[in-house]
Length: 427
Image 1 (spheres, rainbow, N blue to C red):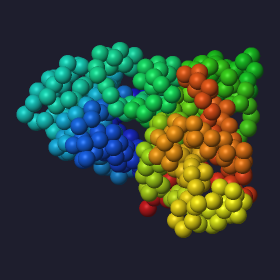
Image 2 (tube, one colour; image 1 turned 180 degrees about the horizontal axis):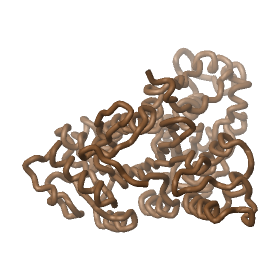
Image 3 (cartoon, rainbow, N blue to C red; image 1 turned 90 degrees about the horizontal axis):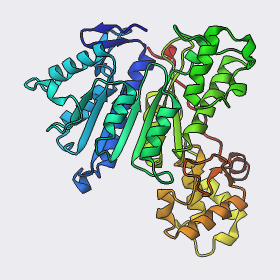
Image 4 (cartoon, helix red, strand yellow; image 1 turned 180 degrees about the vertical axis):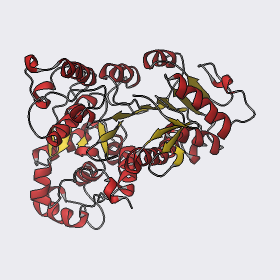
């Protein structure tokens, strides 16, 4: 796919695609840094890093409106240069395409460091700006990053279509070294519809899992999808003649399942740049607050309703069903069983929880008691066990909200799936 440029900006189309994606990243980067740096109470002292893999040029030319906006790498740089508290923030920009890389250097020179020779920022040697530019392939760049000290780090994998699972798992295994450890987040770009509609040079996936009926082009696409998922187990669920929309949904669910191996929360944000095209930004995190904030950023810029179940009504029913846990709790005081259930329902993506969740520790400090509370909720039918394997082979019980139960017993409906903003909805 040939790249186009207007001056130094890479040409992309879609107010509901590239522009919306960039706007959301532009809100999330400062939010993420504000928390992970320690915030004003800690004088923003904690070391943080934003790693942009496939950084582009830092600028995007939106064809539909003929305007130049900041890309995600540009937003990372804007945060770095516009906020005086970002001394401990590293911005690492990786771009393998030589043309994009040269434009990126020009953008940095023109927008932010006019008096500096930008070559001083190239490589991984320390520099006074804490900005690092790498004109390397993904594999080589990740090897270079191993030489750097990176603590709280956000990795944005932003290729033209997708990143192989083996690369994602390699980084996750090194970074997320203990059970759902915080301090590492991934944002993954996935051009979902390309797998089903095709886009030169990628042919659409075949509609049968009988390899003898595949064309040569379809075989190549299947092999690429094997790389995306890291195995062949996905094939029977996707390679069939169901409608493309059904297969796309299943495609995302199977991909999420693999990412859950390293991340407790996996949030796919859908985008509809034009016609039937769909791509996703997928946030992978072990910190529920950041995931909820990102979801709210997306909801605020699209026509999705905010999830606001009726706490008072649900709690009234909970009290009627479980008078045994209400002893000693009156007025505004709530039993820990209810607090944990409500956290899982409204704060945790997909209602996923386990006794190591940091926000549940705030409710009950003792680990054994937390586990007992989760087991009480399981026995009462509000939680069910999750069968997702974790990357550390630990026998820690994970749970998900039993949405059917909370709907029938407490009147709480399942959160509606996020819908992309359509080009037709933009005036």
